[in-house]
Amino acid sequence: MPRTEDTDEKKFRVDTPVSDLYFVFLNEFSKDEDLVFVARVVEEDGKEMRVEYFPQSTDKVQKQMWTILQFDERVINYQRRQFSNKEPDRSQYKEPKD
Image (tube, rainbow, N blue to C red):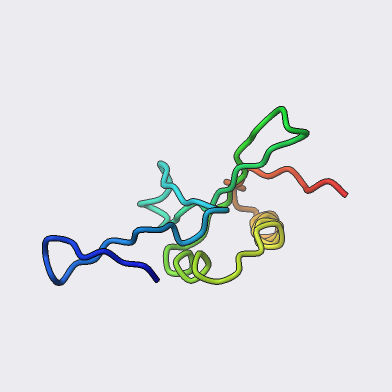
């Protein structure tokens, strides 16, 4: 992985993103529930763009960003799990077109 040395020899910063297909963000639930939201930008018909996202625990998100991320499969599993546990769904996702 490309790295550039920082002013402190013990610290490094990454020159390139881990994945240019996805990004992560925090919101009001992140601290209390130990969540990081995994998101992607989806463009429909070359006209409209929207952001789809779902939360993951902080211990899972780093591995997820470094490995092949199956976004659709993971968000659907998250939604099913939340529904079966009768917990709030904090994702924003529109099923992929066939």
